Length: 114
Length: 232
Image (cartoon, rainbow over all chains, first blue to last red; front, side, top):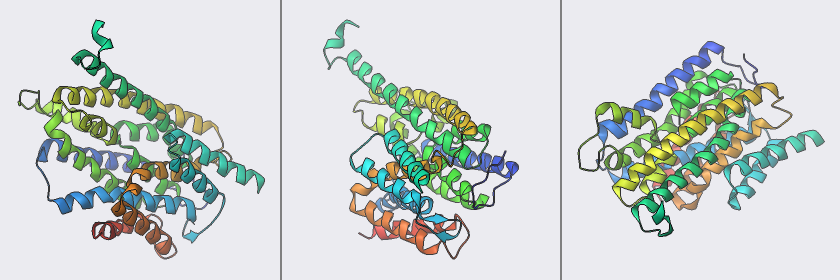
């Protein structure tokens, strides 16, 4: 069942399954490569540093995409309020679920009022 | 156990590690609820959400793939960002091998056992395992965290996805779960100067490229943020 978002071209059910399978295989291959194949060897410091920074770039990119874009447009809407609330919650070191629920509630509230 | 009152006894230490690992499992189960909800709101079926949690079993990549799918990105774009996030599990694997892949007497565990353990090499098991100073406690931390997380992560996903398939996801703001979850996962990276540079560059790249390239592709280009972080 595809209940696509407002602006997206939804992937078919089959395509979603392909994504699930290919992503699972890749994630497992990476785990095995590190844990079983390469094992306790040390890597060059520069490689180590680059690998450690990938999540920082990607997660920030995903935050920007999910908050300020819709399809191929730059948009500022209720989601920006959600992000602001999430940032405050993270800054106050709130637990994960509090960050998520507070952001969802703020977004839903702004939408209801608009 | 009679010696639980003294924190330094091996039994008490073991108990402390087990308690911490189980508590973390509970917290992660709640995160899984939000993943189940978010995945279904992005267009995945309940079974697809569950399959991701069972087989992919690495939260950030799962959230990332569903976020790109929900925005209308291609399969390749959804896969690319998620796979790049999964690269850190390779790094964790290298770090954990010396602590978990042997039996404590320097003998490697049987290959089959190492292949099973590999599936559990993720953020949380790495944090809990590397926090322990003795090899014995490290192995306990790894396995208790692994099993408790695997159970709660999959159960939480199922419940969240089922709930999501009955509710109107727009009204409840479930789509806002994505950026909020990513913000929470990003927080530790913002505590270093390098992480901050990499994050800012990544976010700027996405906003700048979005009007010009297909959905999801800016996420892949955002890894150039790593270059800006590393130079500092």
